[in-house]
Image: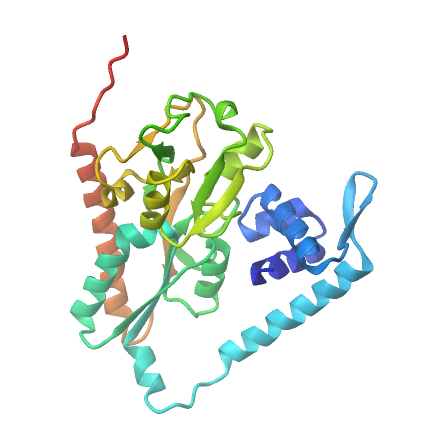
Length: 317
């Protein structure tokens, strides 16, 4: 059982439907359904039952949702409690808290560190991982200073500055010599096992959305990696498949170790955005602005480098 499943249960009960909860959580409806099924299996409780064409919470589901809400409120209260340790205020002034999706951490983590320490040599950079919904909630609560994540569907950045740093270009990759390396459609690889970076059900795992849109059911995700370097190494040494959202991530691999599938269907593309408060305040404002500019510059440099790379062509007889 994962804490995120309890958060989703509270969303489903409070919002009244799986689809509205999915929109509020920035994930897909099938991912919400999978999470609720996993929660029922882990607890041995029936949390929902059918009522006509809809699912409604059982008494156990309502009770657990109330407990989940109380637990979440307690956690937020704990986060907001003042820290009286000596030097805590000074440490906060000299630290930067950044939330990044797995791919964004690889692409922009190094330039964030360089830019921050150019202004705050003795400061600390803390990187947080999680779903886009979780990280954006952390930004809105003031727990995070800036966030780089795929823009959730239907999300409105109220009170936040939003800068598109790049648009994902996802492709499916397998090891060289994989039995299905010549597959040309999602239907041909239905039932294959996948490894994903981060949590299943988040916007970065676009294979789930691609399957759902075409009515192929849920993909069989058997492994989760914390970063794309790990995911790609697993793929290179197994028959698992993965989605790579940006070609620069392949720089971690020996050329040719993994190869893309030439699928006729396009995978969902996302705008990857940098979010920050509209008006950074305090003594860290200038340093934070420098970090934002560094990320934007790095995005442009990465895009230019990828376009300049020679493209291999395969000539088929």
